[in-house]
Length: 315
Image (cartoon, rainbow, N blue to C red; front, side, top):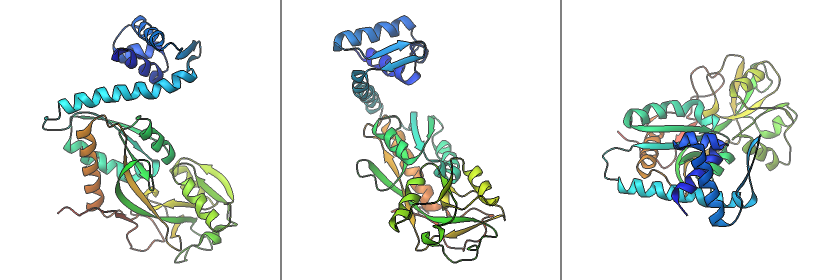
């Protein structure tokens, strides 16, 4: 079995076609076909079916894919270890991030990270928390921002933020010091579709209720606009809140509910230096910035709503 065969197999799956794999690897399409045929012959099983719609993995193909990715990652690890004497991180790092993290922290983090390590190629993938965890386990990303706990992943604590009820400005609870989940039981709820949904549903179930979901909305701008128009209320972590108009009020949940965020690490790291640099940069940024609600948010007191976890402030 050759490394080039594994590379061709993974490339076909990732690009969805033999043509795309050939382009990604810089070889001819016939060379890709030859590599796949050789791998199937050596393993004694068919790995995929081809038709006009593209490729479809067989059951054996799905099982072999995990090992083929591991082979490629181990190969890249060896190259990284051999070149670890380099002064600065280089190569590529793949980062998984949720929409709520991407709203506020990610731009500042990328500014800091890119400024420190301009030679790094950065690939960003956005998805919900469960998807990011799957990407980490499947080696599709090197690091990812995840919600704790994640017992099967290596994680570095990053920070905590607080959950808020976001209400129309004239809502009956707009001036409350805190909002209990029970007070939202009969409210039409605009459910944030993605990394926060599981947490919100668990809060309702903890008091024996199911949320009265009127809409499931993925885009945060759309979600806030619909709340402002009176379509219902929502629950969001403070880091997911963009600067809001006077048409909205944000009131903390009572008792306070905090979400713990961490940096998850893939079991097979492609680029040790880049991952280490990312972790140190992200934790330093979390410890040196006051991640309160953004300017323009109405109805929230001056308390910190996001705080670093296990991070020492760097002077």
